[in-house]
Length: 442
Ligand SMILES: *[C@@H]1O[C@H](CO)[C@@H](O)[C@H](O)[C@H]1NC(C)=O
Ligand SMILES: [Fe+2]
Figure: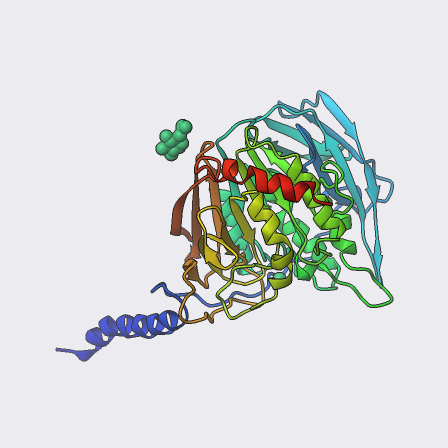
């Protein structure tokens, strides 16, 4: 028999055995991880200067949505026309615009316009600055169920595109991003290419983001941190009583979501901590049975990357979040996926939060492969692959979490779990006294 066919048959088996050995050495799964992908190239594509670019939307208080876009033309109006049928705009809203300069870079005019009141679960057609093209958005539902897409540490590589394509294929109401958006890293025009890359998704569903280290871009004595991020990704901080775009909250269909800042003060005397206490005192678990928190640097992380970076923030804020019975914490930063059991103070706790690290959106730095061995008892699933998460909050007691890796451009589901709420398990009632004591303390 000719040996060639045998080699052809055996070769893939040998290759997959080698790959499996590599993967199992670093993660708990036998999944064969694909290679990193290159940073995307964006051809220069001149458009009329009044053309709206980088359109994205975000929730802006009850029944309202903020539309953000950029024009090269400084005098373009911050006007959004919108309505529920295509080409027929029954309403118009005026907003404001800003711009910033960063060393030799000058941004376009950044427009922020709040539209509403809007009907829940409704498709709206809209135009920015009186210019075509027309965009389409869907408002989230007023009541559960609601579905969140979650992906952090996105960047703008071939893997980012793959992650976004997979998210685009799923049915979801809004996107949660736990920090590290563009990986512009001081090169300001990369904020613009990132804005263009995400526009197809971010103009259609609200993108609720918090900041990561790659948004900082501070230069001692020259530039404060987060200048570009704050100008471009304005979130509903004023609407939620916060004095800073770096932390805020919003409510959607029975879920109270708190976005915290890993890179601003978080000690118990800080403005952020004070705001967090005030925000928690407004949460009514009858109205919003689910309480979810996002920030960038994970507190529960058994990957060797970024070990201990979240410790100070955790020491300050975990007791408060625990007293408040936070159901789920979503973080990024570590370029991998990990999910914990309900945990508090480093130990399994039925009234603790489920911590999920989902920093595997696809950025150019690649994956974080090395894990601590043995795996800590709180760690349920960990793997270094690019992908995204989906959280479907079904009703006041049940939510379904699933992680999907970008496996050969197929959204292969790789981890999933039903999470029952702390309202339904009695923790919220049990701890109401403890929470009140912390919230009342000066
Ligand atoms: C909530 O959803 C879960 C899962 O679909 C279901 O088993 C449960 O009965 C629902 N609970 C209520 C109160 O509807
Ligand atoms: Fe990060």
